Length: 331
Image 1 (cartoon, rainbow, N blue to C red):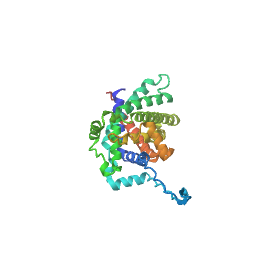
Image 2: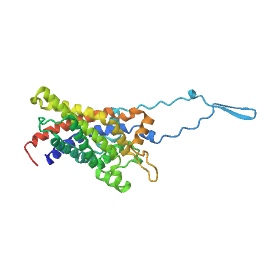
Image 3: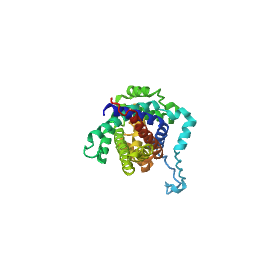
């Protein structure tokens, strides 16, 4: 117990994060769809009167008929496959791995911390008279604590990752063109202040608590249920895949609304002397719902599931294999 859990969780998290990075990139691009229109909505032009004539020396104007003005059809938002193809066309295959260095740093800081801390809490909180099984409510509590601490540690890498992933959707003149995660963090601290590295940290912490509690607790609970039904001999690849995919779907459904707001908060550009597009997380959520509808909080849900499912499967399958490698090794 101790360092070993951090090392095992860190290795599994880095492998999972890098292998599913293109799916995470597509998810981020989809979550930012429609944002510019929502934040900088152009004022409606004044309408000319439909008819004007003089009566008794005074000009009288009749208001226009609204049905005479054709309503502009809202453009259809591209799906995950279309977004992926668009990235390939405009940025090439390398574009799908924009920000992968930040992903590696984020997994090293955030996921290593949450996985190791969850392992420690799970061991400490397991009642000795319960056959080594931790009750569900304690699993959730361990996940909430571990996720919150991990997110606070890894927030700078999270901000850098979101910005690097979103950069390709900006016009050429507005792109930040970070050379890597070190350059991104250095420029943010230099140009926007050190506090910018923890922009959206409250959302990051909230999301991480939700994801970790739902993901890790669901995996452990599902795995225990399968083994209780089929016996200890079923503790193999099929059980790990089934339990981890279930955990991925639960985590995606629980965290998507917070993830959308977090992505927009982290990606917002604040011009010198100008007020920020969003005053805070609540303001961001309200503006998003007001201008795009409540389902905007589930933008990118399909790619979130497509990413969270494979990520969680790779994470736990790798973790189980790494545990076998380190079995009997103490450090």
